[in-house]
Amino acid sequence: RFSAILPFGVGGICHFLPNVAEMSQRVTRHFEDMLQCLIPAFKGLFPVKHNALIKTLLFHLSEWHALAKLQMHSDDSLAQLDQAQKKLGAEIQQFQRKTCDKFKTYELPNKAAAWYSQQQTQTGPNGPAKSTSTAHLISFNKFHALGDYSRSIQMFGTTDSYTTQTVSG
Image 1 (cartoon, rainbow, N blue to C red):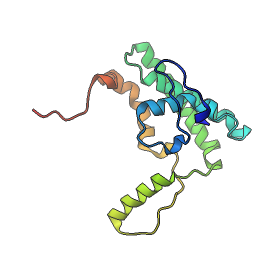
Image 2: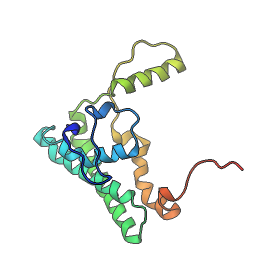
Image 3: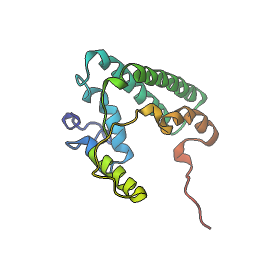
Image 4: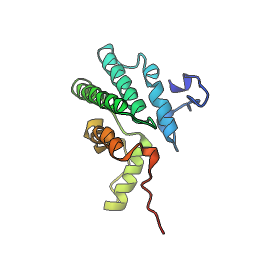
């Protein structure tokens, strides 16, 4: 579906490869392009009962991302980011309650193989790698950290204005 979306804009959406899910060596721009094109790419993919909720969730995720990646913030933009965070959190909780369990999701084969390889080096051979059912977004620490973005920007500035690299002198 993504490969049917034509590139557009100067420095905008680039051409997608045939299998977006298995793209290797993705960079931030690829994820941003995918996020911006998710709603049209998912059109008609989900049952009507879940489609509206998924589209709304994707819209609020895109809105939050657009606000979070601004290079300059004001009190108003940070207030908008807080509001977007609240809407996104409510949508994700609703998605978790009403939609998540209705779909079985699995890791991609390459992710399952990487996990198996890591486990094998830690505990010894366990058998062939297979795709396993995945935990949902809400159970990951990265999800819980979304609520700290606005406060972090107030305290430290935008993430393009500092580095976390160790300095040697």
